[in-house]
Length: 379
Image 1: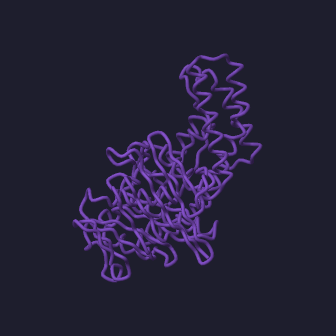
Image 2: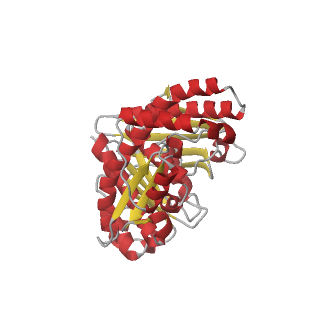
Image 3: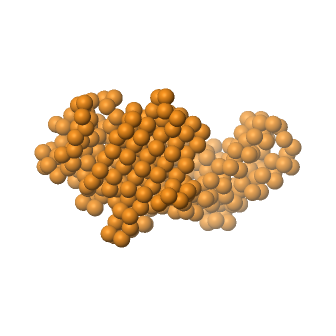
């Protein structure tokens, strides 16, 4: 039986001194003007499901002003399981517990995954490549323990290598780190490339619904070891890259050797999955450059709905879907297309400033929480 979020309590979290959501059903709508804590609630739910935040905050930013720490408690249930997940957030540290037992984040990711979409996610269509890589890894870490472990190992090694490069350490020492880094880097590339392939099959279907079937999307995941000419060409038109584990390792090793002098001059690592690129195309043209705002919104929403479908497919668990101030950003056609994509078995939270963004049938089926008054009430 699929797990679901039954309730969540916030204590000294962001703007909340004390706030709770209880008896949560399939669809919850949080209504209220700006600065009433809607996004804070969405972030808290994400922190207790995906165990990351789309805001990428420092720990002290999550703690209410003057409080020593923030605490969150989530109740996750199914017909056969009753779980309590707790988090204590202090400046510089986060501690998680499952049914009272201390747990590392990588042991909790995937328990009840979540997908979040906010207006800031438009960077996935038009912003820096780092945002797309981070979104891929957040998805991968919720789907696979192996992805979590390889990502963690790779990031530790890159951090160590960058410190050595900054200190102008001997070349032999850098090479020894490369010997450890290359297997993790090649494996992370392969995990991401496979993830893009699986995600995109669902993404294309969702985009067809959002765009009314009038446009075709494509994607390219471009490894860092390709030449500058190839990488430039992959920004201009869709390209396919296919590597076995052995081929990826050999290509990475060759690039590390050929660009060693460049890395020493720049004092940072320039080869590895932290420099891979994920390019999207609409009717053959790069979406980051040529897509309209409406097309970019449809592209990002398709990505998010594809995440939901892929999580359900790979884990057998429907993720929590968090839509933060999405409806006001969409025209009527895309808004209705999005609602049509919401699955009955996907627990969904939507924030908005104006109830007129929703059809009456949706509000009638939802629990509506009004954050606009002095008192919080649940209908």
